[in-house]
Image (cartoon, rainbow, N blue to C red; front, side, top):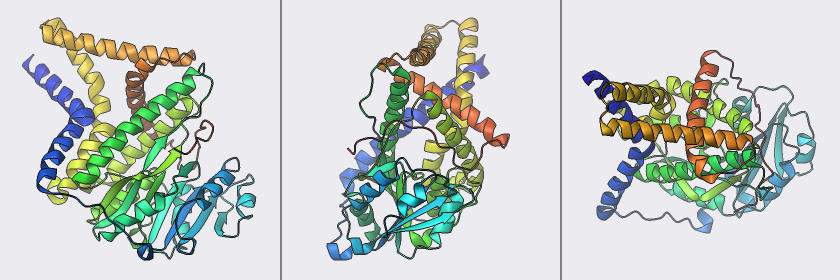
Length: 404
């Protein structure tokens, strides 16, 4: 029983640390460090603004591309220093014809489909500006986003800058519980992730940029293998491996609509989970904390534990807790088992209510937590069975959100 207890408490501590303790540890450390070290905000004068390329990869975005173009033209950045490059990969709808109506946008089109990674690799050959900014076709940037991003490049150790992703839903029929559950869960998750990214950035570096809005020093771009699922993560982590930092800038943000429903959100999560496992295998050297120090500590704490360890520990903790209550019904173990049972019942309740179009806010957190971890198992299965395609398989999303 001693071994069972040790495994139980170690597993419980790892899960708690991964989802809660890591953030608390960073927060406490940074509060102490701020007492001794004040950080100044970087400032760029108008004549110091660098030339940049805004690169957007698209596939069959005819329904939203005009709004994307309109949003791009509204960005507050000197027109003579902003180059706009759209690359389409095998689009078969009217996307290309719509883009061609705007001569200030350079369009790169290839008839056959090769995937987003291949499209980005191809487009980067045409980029000559010192800074490249990537964003998705279905995200809309705030007017000051580009200025807020480029100011960080005054620091020579900054190799990339990541903006903030905001999941914003349109006001819709409150009876659409499944739609609201997907949006609410995704929104809560990204709010928490945004907080962790702020802490990560101040501590040392962001551990992987989000493709909705991130930038890099163009010379640091290394073409990615075309079978890579999380291109933004691999590109930014390769920059970290080379000794540069990735900075998080919350004043530069991309607004995105939540997934249309839970099925569509699960499709997206499974792809991300498959990509997470692939990324860990591709970045095995980063597990060497003696070589990469703070970067390895952040990478293991924020990513590896969540993607490859915690999904297995959660059912193990529940199983061991049952064994401990049967063999040693100590009040502490009974209380922990009751808490776990209540949490998973709440998650099941959230799932049932969502399927029946009933919105219950209290159940969003437990449902989405279990939802993410189940998706990770399915993502692992997809990756190891080689059934996850690198080609775009767009998840349907709700109506385009208002810019916040």
